[in-house]
Length: 633
Image 1 (spheres, rainbow, N blue to C red):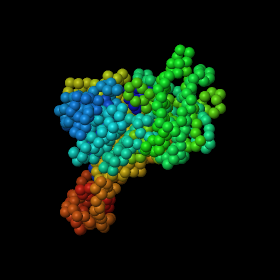
Image 2: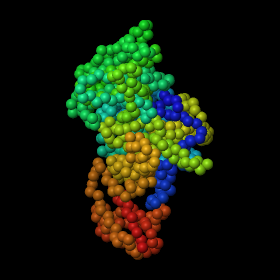
Image 3: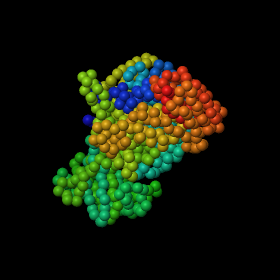
Image 4: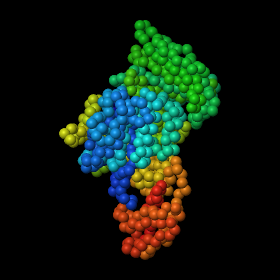
């Protein structure tokens, strides 16, 4: 499978062949159809009343999947193109162009060409999270949610923070809960332990009620990580390979750090190390090298080696003490020259050394890895591994991090297909030994919408439709870029069911309700986290969880139902200051069979007309949803 350089996430355009996992196979794999159809729920949930903000690029504002299922009502609220400088910028910001409402968005048609030209990644991801299908079977998870699009400039940490803040401001104006979906990752933007400017902002916005979901990354099939525990002074070497990509590829970017403890908790003591770059011939004889460079002082060097008329270009930057975790950080970049082999050497007296080998591009951002390997006949050399593969923002504690697996389904011949982890899906653990990824979702060969304005997609199409005189297509892509928005859609279903849950409660519910099978058991939690996402179990648990808006944190009202089981009548005792609270009783098919207003004190429910069985009693006050089981005899 060839890596395509047009997006940060791995995109594998596998065509209409045996084993195809379309979005309509992903939906039952994640138990989403049971939520839509209200199986064992008081009613169906579709994301209505929730906003999903998508930070990406390649948005087709005109695509019919962003209307409702009848292709009449438009569901995108706003878009911010951070690359288009003609303005007007969003209120409170000084750059980019904001489009507000259907008229402006449909007139603009799409975001501008940027580091990825006219791309398509954002359209595909947004459609998985919340596309309405446009009359096809490729309906997204939360197909009645509203959407915000930000064509994000990852050249600046501040642009990322601004995108999140803009989305939060809009959600506050709309009075709706917000889920932010991020199908991108950068290994050197924040620290690999989940600290830094982005982590601080995620924590702040999470405290304000924002739910963050991110793809885990696509380096599960490459030994691009290197580690060494130093207990005494030692020197180790490892050869690094350049990823086999084309396009804007420049060379390798090697990030290095050293921690003072085996659990990779943020450093309490700065432990320096030293490194060097080695250039070797085909026989692994060193033909040029830098001296060992210590991390005890900040340094930047931009230099070249000239070897028999050939030039090797490299640079490195040393940060002696990172302000967020006190660890030393190094970024070494080497331009590819296929005439040579390359290695790094590193030495320290103590600590746990880590390095990651990533692609460096001439434009955009390379987040796929190149392997570390042992140097033949060198006794003090080591190979890499596939661990600690989750990057920023997925490595941040408050972010729901999503791995990718193949949807499990039965084909026309009656054979079960799929179910296993996608080989590219990045492996944990989190750098601080946390569970990253946290959960897995369908992400291999998922058919979803393609931007009709793209200049970069060259594959074939799963389906083509016409809308308003324009041709729109659906294509199959693979990556954790696809599984991340799937779970973002599940979070929107959870928040529609119970809009008063805190982000921590949403994360806990997604993890608690993930299901296990033979595939999760064999691959383990480093690949699957808690298991495969189960939207139905998550929504059911959300309905039965008392949620409180954390930034207001009022005392929750208490409601009790007695007797239970009951015959003929039941009573609800309400310990609340609200004068009237709606109460609805549903049967297990989702049909409302009784509606009544609950007042402070005791309210009688007449249930004499109900046939014996199990019912769901749902009470919703101004800041919480309570669902209770009621047994009628």
